[in-house]
Image (cartoon, rainbow, N blue to C red; front, side, top):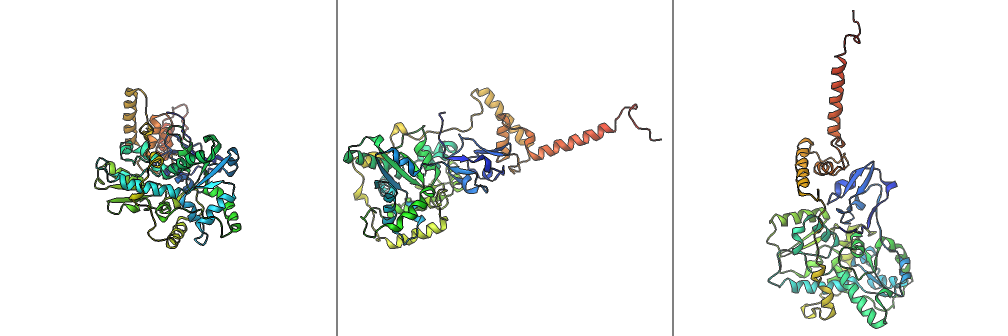
Length: 442
Protein backbone atom coordinates (compact mmCIF):
# COMPACT_ATOMS: atom_id res chain seq x y z
CA UNK A 1 0.00 0.00 0.00
CA UNK A 2 1.34 3.46 -0.89
CA UNK A 3 1.82 6.18 1.69
CA UNK A 4 -1.43 7.90 2.53
CA UNK A 5 -1.59 11.55 3.52
CA UNK A 6 -3.39 12.28 6.78
CA UNK A 7 -4.65 15.66 7.91
CA UNK A 8 -5.29 14.53 11.50
CA UNK A 9 -2.11 14.62 13.59
CA UNK A 10 -1.09 14.16 17.23
CA UNK A 11 0.49 16.94 19.29
CA UNK A 12 2.51 14.60 21.49
CA UNK A 13 3.39 17.00 24.30
CA UNK A 14 -0.30 17.69 24.96
CA UNK A 15 -1.34 14.03 25.08
CA UNK A 16 -1.96 12.72 28.61
CA UNK A 17 -2.51 9.12 27.57
CA UNK A 18 -6.23 8.98 28.36
CA UNK A 19 -8.31 6.62 26.25
CA UNK A 20 -11.02 9.09 25.14
CA UNK A 21 -9.85 9.17 21.53
CA UNK A 22 -9.16 5.44 21.31
CA UNK A 23 -12.63 4.59 22.61
CA UNK A 24 -14.39 6.94 20.17
CA UNK A 25 -12.44 6.22 16.99
CA UNK A 26 -14.89 4.54 14.55
CA UNK A 27 -12.18 2.44 12.87
CA UNK A 28 -10.14 1.58 15.99
CA UNK A 29 -7.18 3.49 14.58
CA UNK A 30 -5.75 4.73 17.91
CA UNK A 31 -3.68 2.95 20.54
CA UNK A 32 -2.19 4.27 23.78
CA UNK A 33 1.44 3.20 24.05
CA UNK A 34 4.05 4.49 26.52
CA UNK A 35 1.50 6.97 27.82
CA UNK A 36 0.83 8.59 24.43
CA UNK A 37 -1.74 8.10 21.69
CA UNK A 38 -0.55 6.54 18.46
CA UNK A 39 -2.53 6.71 15.21
CA UNK A 40 -2.49 3.65 12.95
CA UNK A 41 -2.43 5.42 9.60
CA UNK A 42 -3.91 2.56 7.56
CA UNK A 43 -7.04 2.65 9.73
CA UNK A 44 -7.48 6.43 10.08
CA UNK A 45 -10.23 8.00 7.94
CA UNK A 46 -9.59 11.60 9.07
CA UNK A 47 -13.15 12.02 10.29
CA UNK A 48 -12.02 14.38 13.07
CA UNK A 49 -13.84 12.50 15.83
CA UNK A 50 -10.65 12.38 17.92
CA UNK A 51 -10.21 16.16 17.52
CA UNK A 52 -13.67 16.71 18.96
CA UNK A 53 -13.22 14.21 21.80
CA UNK A 54 -9.69 14.96 23.03
CA UNK A 55 -9.94 16.81 26.39
CA UNK A 56 -6.38 18.18 26.11
CA UNK A 57 -6.64 19.25 22.44
CA UNK A 58 -3.80 16.90 21.54
CA UNK A 59 -5.27 16.20 18.10
CA UNK A 60 -5.14 18.73 15.31
CA UNK A 61 -5.72 18.95 11.57
CA UNK A 62 -3.08 20.05 9.09
CA UNK A 63 -4.47 22.37 6.40
CA UNK A 64 -3.06 25.06 4.12
CA UNK A 65 -2.80 28.76 4.97
CA UNK A 66 -3.49 32.08 3.27
CA UNK A 67 0.26 32.55 2.82
CA UNK A 68 0.24 29.64 0.36
CA UNK A 69 -1.65 31.79 -2.16
CA UNK A 70 1.66 33.53 -2.98
CA UNK A 71 2.77 30.51 -4.97
CA UNK A 72 0.16 31.08 -7.70
CA UNK A 73 -0.55 33.81 -10.25
CA UNK A 74 -4.33 33.57 -9.84
CA UNK A 75 -6.23 32.26 -6.82
CA UNK A 76 -9.83 31.11 -6.54
CA UNK A 77 -11.66 30.43 -3.27
CA UNK A 78 -14.19 27.61 -3.12
CA UNK A 79 -16.19 28.33 0.05
CA UNK A 80 -18.08 25.40 1.54
CA UNK A 81 -21.76 26.15 2.28
CA UNK A 82 -20.91 25.50 5.95
CA UNK A 83 -18.84 28.70 5.93
CA UNK A 84 -22.03 30.76 5.74
CA UNK A 85 -23.27 29.17 8.97
CA UNK A 86 -20.32 30.60 10.90
CA UNK A 87 -21.67 34.13 10.55
CA UNK A 88 -24.85 35.79 11.74
CA UNK A 89 -27.63 35.80 9.17
CA UNK A 90 -27.40 39.60 9.30
CA UNK A 91 -24.14 39.24 7.37
CA UNK A 92 -25.13 38.38 3.83
CA UNK A 93 -23.55 35.60 1.81
CA UNK A 94 -22.50 38.25 -0.68
CA UNK A 95 -20.55 40.06 2.07
CA UNK A 96 -18.85 36.82 3.10
CA UNK A 97 -17.79 36.17 -0.50
CA UNK A 98 -16.58 39.75 -0.88
CA UNK A 99 -14.59 39.27 2.32
CA UNK A 100 -12.73 36.38 0.73
CA UNK A 101 -11.68 38.70 -2.11
CA UNK A 102 -10.42 41.14 0.51
CA UNK A 103 -8.19 38.40 1.91
CA UNK A 104 -6.33 38.03 -1.36
CA UNK A 105 -8.38 35.71 -3.54
CA UNK A 106 -8.90 36.88 -7.13
CA UNK A 107 -12.20 35.07 -7.59
CA UNK A 108 -14.78 33.07 -5.66
CA UNK A 109 -16.84 30.14 -6.88
CA UNK A 110 -19.40 28.73 -4.48
CA UNK A 111 -19.29 25.01 -3.87
CA UNK A 112 -23.06 25.36 -3.43
CA UNK A 113 -23.33 26.06 -7.17
CA UNK A 114 -21.65 22.74 -7.93
CA UNK A 115 -23.89 21.06 -5.36
CA UNK A 116 -26.89 22.22 -7.40
CA UNK A 117 -25.44 20.54 -10.48
CA UNK A 118 -24.81 17.35 -8.53
CA UNK A 119 -28.36 17.46 -7.10
CA UNK A 120 -29.82 17.50 -10.59
CA UNK A 121 -27.49 14.72 -11.71
CA UNK A 122 -28.42 12.57 -8.70
CA UNK A 123 -32.10 12.99 -9.48
CA UNK A 124 -31.41 11.83 -13.03
CA UNK A 125 -29.18 8.94 -11.91
CA UNK A 126 -31.82 7.58 -9.54
CA UNK A 127 -34.11 7.00 -12.53
CA UNK A 128 -31.68 4.47 -13.98
CA UNK A 129 -33.07 0.93 -13.67
CA UNK A 130 -29.63 -0.72 -13.52
CA UNK A 131 -28.46 1.05 -10.34
CA UNK A 132 -27.86 -0.94 -7.16
CA UNK A 133 -30.03 -0.27 -4.13
CA UNK A 134 -29.43 1.50 -1.93
CA UNK A 135 -27.25 4.14 -3.57
CA UNK A 136 -24.87 5.66 -0.99
CA UNK A 137 -23.80 9.29 -1.26
CA UNK A 138 -20.14 9.84 -2.13
CA UNK A 139 -20.02 13.50 -1.09
CA UNK A 140 -18.46 12.96 2.37
CA UNK A 141 -14.82 11.81 2.02
CA UNK A 142 -14.74 10.40 5.55
CA UNK A 143 -17.70 8.14 4.75
CA UNK A 144 -16.10 7.03 1.48
CA UNK A 145 -12.91 6.20 3.36
CA UNK A 146 -14.94 4.38 6.05
CA UNK A 147 -16.47 2.20 3.34
CA UNK A 148 -13.04 1.54 1.84
CA UNK A 149 -11.51 0.29 5.09
CA UNK A 150 -14.50 -1.23 6.90
CA UNK A 151 -17.26 -2.03 4.38
CA UNK A 152 -15.53 -2.72 1.03
CA UNK A 153 -18.51 -4.81 -0.09
CA UNK A 154 -20.51 -1.56 -0.33
CA UNK A 155 -18.14 0.24 -2.70
CA UNK A 156 -20.31 -0.62 -5.71
CA UNK A 157 -23.23 1.13 -3.99
CA UNK A 158 -21.39 4.47 -3.88
CA UNK A 159 -22.78 7.18 -6.12
CA UNK A 160 -20.29 7.34 -9.06
CA UNK A 161 -20.07 11.14 -8.97
CA UNK A 162 -17.34 13.45 -7.81
CA UNK A 163 -18.09 15.45 -4.67
CA UNK A 164 -19.43 18.99 -5.30
CA UNK A 165 -16.13 20.59 -4.27
CA UNK A 166 -14.24 18.55 -6.87
CA UNK A 167 -16.85 19.41 -9.49
CA UNK A 168 -16.47 23.10 -8.62
CA UNK A 169 -12.68 22.90 -8.86
CA UNK A 170 -12.75 21.27 -12.29
CA UNK A 171 -15.19 23.80 -13.66
CA UNK A 172 -13.10 26.68 -12.29
CA UNK A 173 -9.79 25.27 -13.51
CA UNK A 174 -11.11 24.80 -17.00
CA UNK A 175 -12.83 28.19 -17.28
CA UNK A 176 -9.88 30.09 -15.74
CA UNK A 177 -7.41 28.40 -18.10
CA UNK A 178 -9.52 29.42 -21.06
CA UNK A 179 -10.25 33.03 -20.12
CA UNK A 180 -6.90 33.90 -18.54
CA UNK A 181 -4.61 31.77 -20.74
CA UNK A 182 -2.83 30.42 -17.68
CA UNK A 183 -1.31 26.98 -17.24
CA UNK A 184 -2.83 24.74 -14.52
CA UNK A 185 0.17 25.19 -12.23
CA UNK A 186 -0.38 28.97 -12.26
CA UNK A 187 -3.94 28.68 -10.91
CA UNK A 188 -4.46 28.09 -7.21
CA UNK A 189 -7.85 26.66 -6.27
CA UNK A 190 -8.53 26.63 -2.54
CA UNK A 191 -11.35 24.89 -0.70
CA UNK A 192 -12.44 26.62 2.51
CA UNK A 193 -13.09 23.42 4.42
CA UNK A 194 -15.11 22.50 7.51
CA UNK A 195 -13.39 19.14 8.06
CA UNK A 196 -9.97 17.44 7.87
CA UNK A 197 -11.22 14.64 5.60
CA UNK A 198 -11.57 17.14 2.73
CA UNK A 199 -7.91 18.10 3.13
CA UNK A 200 -6.97 14.44 3.02
CA UNK A 201 -9.08 13.81 -0.09
CA UNK A 202 -7.19 16.61 -1.84
CA UNK A 203 -3.66 15.69 -0.76
CA UNK A 204 -3.78 11.92 -0.85
CA UNK A 205 -1.62 10.27 -3.48
CA UNK A 206 -3.35 6.90 -3.86
CA UNK A 207 -6.38 7.90 -5.88
CA UNK A 208 -7.45 10.37 -8.57
CA UNK A 209 -5.41 13.58 -8.53
CA UNK A 210 -7.63 16.39 -7.35
CA UNK A 211 -8.20 19.58 -9.33
CA UNK A 212 -7.98 21.46 -6.01
CA UNK A 213 -4.64 22.99 -5.05
CA UNK A 214 -5.26 22.88 -1.33
CA UNK A 215 -7.66 23.39 1.55
CA UNK A 216 -7.76 26.06 4.23
CA UNK A 217 -9.64 25.22 7.44
CA UNK A 218 -12.56 27.50 8.25
CA UNK A 219 -11.13 27.93 11.76
CA UNK A 220 -7.87 29.24 10.26
CA UNK A 221 -9.50 31.82 8.03
CA UNK A 222 -12.43 32.86 10.21
CA UNK A 223 -10.78 35.59 12.26
CA UNK A 224 -9.26 37.36 9.24
CA UNK A 225 -12.52 37.05 7.33
CA UNK A 226 -14.56 38.44 10.22
CA UNK A 227 -12.28 41.49 10.35
CA UNK A 228 -12.53 42.04 6.58
CA UNK A 229 -16.32 42.00 6.35
CA UNK A 230 -17.16 45.33 8.13
CA UNK A 231 -15.13 47.26 5.53
CA UNK A 232 -17.21 45.96 2.63
CA UNK A 233 -19.63 48.31 0.92
CA UNK A 234 -23.21 47.10 0.58
CA UNK A 235 -23.03 48.11 -3.09
CA UNK A 236 -20.36 45.52 -3.78
CA UNK A 237 -20.70 43.45 -6.96
CA UNK A 238 -23.22 40.64 -6.60
CA UNK A 239 -21.14 37.52 -6.06
CA UNK A 240 -23.66 35.04 -4.72
CA UNK A 241 -25.05 32.82 -7.48
CA UNK A 242 -26.15 29.83 -5.42
CA UNK A 243 -29.66 28.98 -4.26
CA UNK A 244 -30.85 27.13 -1.19
CA UNK A 245 -30.79 23.91 -3.21
CA UNK A 246 -26.99 23.98 -3.02
CA UNK A 247 -26.50 25.89 0.22
CA UNK A 248 -28.69 23.36 2.03
CA UNK A 249 -26.02 20.71 1.49
CA UNK A 250 -24.30 22.15 4.57
CA UNK A 251 -26.93 20.46 6.75
CA UNK A 252 -28.11 16.89 6.99
CA UNK A 253 -30.93 16.29 4.53
CA UNK A 254 -29.81 18.98 2.09
CA UNK A 255 -28.39 16.54 -0.43
CA UNK A 256 -31.40 14.24 -0.59
CA UNK A 257 -33.90 17.11 -0.34
CA UNK A 258 -34.88 16.86 -4.01
CA UNK A 259 -35.53 13.10 -3.84
CA UNK A 260 -38.94 13.38 -2.17
CA UNK A 261 -40.52 10.58 -4.16
CA UNK A 262 -37.83 8.07 -3.17
CA UNK A 263 -37.26 6.06 0.00
CA UNK A 264 -34.24 7.87 1.47
CA UNK A 265 -32.32 7.65 4.73
CA UNK A 266 -30.37 10.55 6.19
CA UNK A 267 -27.80 9.48 8.79
CA UNK A 268 -25.10 11.63 10.38
CA UNK A 269 -22.40 11.18 12.99
CA UNK A 270 -19.64 8.74 12.09
CA UNK A 271 -20.72 6.06 14.58
CA UNK A 272 -24.34 6.22 13.43
CA UNK A 273 -23.16 6.02 9.82
CA UNK A 274 -21.06 2.96 10.64
CA UNK A 275 -24.04 1.30 12.33
CA UNK A 276 -26.31 2.08 9.35
CA UNK A 277 -23.79 0.68 6.85
CA UNK A 278 -23.52 -2.47 8.96
CA UNK A 279 -27.30 -2.82 8.68
CA UNK A 280 -27.02 -2.50 4.90
CA UNK A 281 -24.38 -5.24 4.80
CA UNK A 282 -26.69 -7.46 6.85
CA UNK A 283 -29.50 -6.84 4.36
CA UNK A 284 -31.78 -5.06 6.84
CA UNK A 285 -32.11 -1.86 4.80
CA UNK A 286 -32.65 -3.38 1.37
CA UNK A 287 -35.83 -1.35 0.75
CA UNK A 288 -33.96 1.95 0.67
CA UNK A 289 -33.26 3.87 -2.52
CA UNK A 290 -30.71 6.40 -1.28
CA UNK A 291 -28.57 6.94 1.82
CA UNK A 292 -27.24 10.40 2.58
CA UNK A 293 -24.40 9.63 4.98
CA UNK A 294 -22.44 12.37 6.74
CA UNK A 295 -19.56 11.83 9.15
CA UNK A 296 -20.18 14.97 11.20
CA UNK A 297 -23.13 15.55 13.53
CA UNK A 298 -25.76 17.59 11.73
CA UNK A 299 -23.79 17.47 8.49
CA UNK A 300 -20.91 19.72 7.41
CA UNK A 301 -22.04 22.42 9.87
CA UNK A 302 -20.77 20.03 12.57
CA UNK A 303 -17.30 19.74 11.02
CA UNK A 304 -14.29 19.71 13.34
CA UNK A 305 -12.75 22.76 11.63
CA UNK A 306 -15.76 25.02 12.10
CA UNK A 307 -15.79 27.66 14.84
CA UNK A 308 -19.47 27.77 15.77
CA UNK A 309 -21.43 25.22 17.76
CA UNK A 310 -23.36 23.12 15.26
CA UNK A 311 -26.75 23.98 16.80
CA UNK A 312 -26.01 27.70 16.48
CA UNK A 313 -24.84 27.07 12.91
CA UNK A 314 -28.03 25.17 12.10
CA UNK A 315 -30.17 28.00 13.49
CA UNK A 316 -28.30 30.53 11.37
CA UNK A 317 -28.76 28.45 8.24
CA UNK A 318 -32.49 28.24 8.84
CA UNK A 319 -32.58 32.02 9.19
CA UNK A 320 -30.76 32.36 5.88
CA UNK A 321 -33.22 29.98 4.24
CA UNK A 322 -36.14 32.19 5.28
CA UNK A 323 -34.47 35.18 3.63
CA UNK A 324 -33.84 33.45 0.32
CA UNK A 325 -36.28 33.43 -2.64
CA UNK A 326 -38.67 30.51 -2.24
CA UNK A 327 -38.57 27.75 -4.85
CA UNK A 328 -35.49 29.02 -6.67
CA UNK A 329 -33.52 25.98 -7.80
CA UNK A 330 -32.24 24.07 -10.77
CA UNK A 331 -34.54 21.55 -12.44
CA UNK A 332 -34.13 18.52 -14.64
CA UNK A 333 -34.28 20.91 -17.61
CA UNK A 334 -30.96 22.28 -16.36
CA UNK A 335 -29.23 18.91 -16.60
CA UNK A 336 -25.45 19.39 -16.90
CA UNK A 337 -24.09 19.16 -20.44
CA UNK A 338 -20.65 19.33 -22.01
CA UNK A 339 -17.75 19.74 -19.64
CA UNK A 340 -20.10 20.02 -16.64
CA UNK A 341 -21.30 16.49 -17.33
CA UNK A 342 -17.73 15.25 -17.79
CA UNK A 343 -16.52 16.58 -14.44
CA UNK A 344 -19.49 15.13 -12.60
CA UNK A 345 -18.92 11.49 -13.39
CA UNK A 346 -16.04 9.69 -11.69
CA UNK A 347 -14.10 7.82 -14.38
CA UNK A 348 -13.85 4.03 -14.16
CA UNK A 349 -10.05 4.04 -14.05
CA UNK A 350 -10.27 6.13 -10.89
CA UNK A 351 -13.01 4.16 -9.19
CA UNK A 352 -12.98 3.87 -5.41
CA UNK A 353 -10.85 0.90 -4.34
CA UNK A 354 -10.97 -1.11 -1.09
CA UNK A 355 -8.17 -0.44 1.39
CA UNK A 356 -7.84 -3.44 3.74
CA UNK A 357 -6.59 -2.42 7.17
CA UNK A 358 -5.89 -5.73 8.89
CA UNK A 359 -3.62 -8.14 7.06
CA UNK A 360 -2.40 -10.59 9.68
CA UNK A 361 0.33 -12.03 7.47
CA UNK A 362 1.22 -12.38 3.80
CA UNK A 363 1.56 -16.14 4.37
CA UNK A 364 -1.94 -17.64 4.51
CA UNK A 365 -0.82 -20.42 6.89
CA UNK A 366 0.66 -17.92 9.35
CA UNK A 367 -2.40 -15.72 8.99
CA UNK A 368 -4.71 -18.62 9.90
CA UNK A 369 -2.51 -19.42 12.88
CA UNK A 370 -2.88 -15.83 14.08
CA UNK A 371 -6.65 -16.02 13.68
CA UNK A 372 -6.64 -19.05 15.98
CA UNK A 373 -4.41 -17.15 18.42
CA UNK A 374 -6.86 -14.23 18.43
CA UNK A 375 -9.79 -16.55 19.12
CA UNK A 376 -7.93 -18.27 21.95
CA UNK A 377 -6.89 -14.95 23.45
CA UNK A 378 -10.47 -13.67 23.36
CA UNK A 379 -11.49 -16.57 25.59
CA UNK A 380 -8.92 -15.49 28.17
CA UNK A 381 -9.56 -11.75 28.11
CA UNK A 382 -12.37 -10.37 30.33
CA UNK A 383 -14.44 -8.79 27.52
CA UNK A 384 -15.03 -5.52 29.39
CA UNK A 385 -13.73 -3.32 26.53
CA UNK A 386 -12.54 -0.79 29.10
CA UNK A 387 -9.66 0.50 26.99
CA UNK A 388 -7.27 0.71 29.96
CA UNK A 389 -4.82 -1.53 28.09
CA UNK A 390 -4.36 1.16 25.44
CA UNK A 391 -6.37 -0.72 22.82
CA UNK A 392 -10.00 0.32 22.27
CA UNK A 393 -11.48 -3.13 22.95
CA UNK A 394 -10.56 -6.63 24.03
CA UNK A 395 -10.79 -7.83 20.44
CA UNK A 396 -8.36 -5.20 19.18
CA UNK A 397 -6.01 -6.09 22.06
CA UNK A 398 -6.18 -9.73 20.96
CA UNK A 399 -5.31 -8.62 17.42
CA UNK A 400 -2.43 -6.50 18.70
CA UNK A 401 -1.11 -9.43 20.75
CA UNK A 402 -1.24 -11.72 17.70
CA UNK A 403 0.64 -9.07 15.71
CA UNK A 404 3.32 -8.75 18.41
CA UNK A 405 2.30 -5.17 19.26
CA UNK A 406 1.00 -5.90 22.77
CA UNK A 407 1.11 -8.53 25.52
CA UNK A 408 -1.55 -10.24 27.59
CA UNK A 409 -0.47 -8.44 30.75
CA UNK A 410 -1.31 -5.09 29.12
CA UNK A 411 -4.81 -5.97 30.28
CA UNK A 412 -5.05 -4.61 33.82
CA UNK A 413 -7.33 -7.47 34.87
CA UNK A 414 -4.94 -10.14 33.55
CA UNK A 415 -2.06 -8.28 35.20
CA UNK A 416 -3.93 -8.30 38.51
CA UNK A 417 -4.44 -12.05 38.16
CA UNK A 418 -0.73 -12.51 37.49
CA UNK A 419 0.24 -10.41 40.51
CA UNK A 420 -2.24 -12.26 42.73
CA UNK A 421 -0.97 -15.62 41.53
CA UNK A 422 2.61 -14.52 42.03
CA UNK A 423 1.84 -13.32 45.57
CA UNK A 424 0.16 -16.63 46.39
CA UNK A 425 3.17 -18.49 45.02
CA UNK A 426 5.52 -16.42 47.19
CA UNK A 427 3.45 -17.22 50.28
CA UNK A 428 3.49 -20.92 49.45
CA UNK A 429 7.24 -20.85 48.91
CA UNK A 430 7.74 -19.00 52.20
CA UNK A 431 5.88 -21.83 53.98
CA UNK A 432 8.12 -24.42 52.35
CA UNK A 433 11.52 -23.22 53.58
CA UNK A 434 14.12 -25.97 54.03
CA UNK A 435 14.86 -27.01 57.68
CA UNK A 436 18.22 -25.23 57.60
CA UNK A 437 16.52 -21.88 57.01
CA UNK A 438 13.39 -22.40 59.05
CA UNK A 439 13.28 -20.37 62.28
CA UNK A 440 13.15 -22.19 65.59
CA UNK A 441 9.82 -21.49 67.14
CA UNK A 442 10.49 -23.37 70.43
